[in-house]
Image (tube, rainbow, N blue to C red; front, side, top):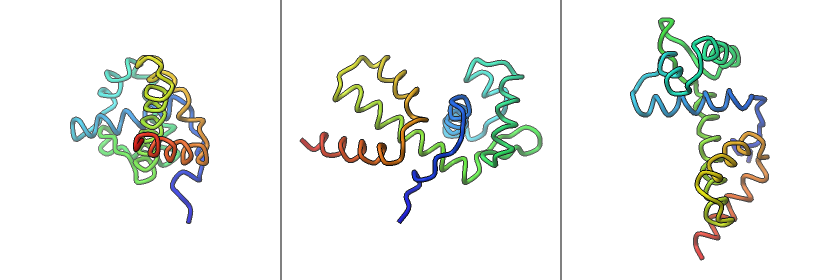
Length: 133
């Protein structure tokens, strides 16, 4: 049986951040607009627009009425994947390696898009066993 982690998408680090930002903003507000992403990320409207067009062209998002941004099923699945990966990496770095919260957050963010499905699953299993002890 294939897991959702077996396919490695070719997304830039920025695109991953925007998927996660769209997810977070939707959870918080119930809707997402480009201006919300601009405020959330601190990036210019032009930068946000470029990333949104890339996500739209790869079927990760839809834009309704030229205003409201939604994750597609594909985009939602991928954002969940990166959120889970980030959480497991953060916990590992903070709890096992005992790095600072700031370092754990930064490093988890940098690593999440490069972790193979095999490594993710092994790390998840390790953390489950480690937390049980």
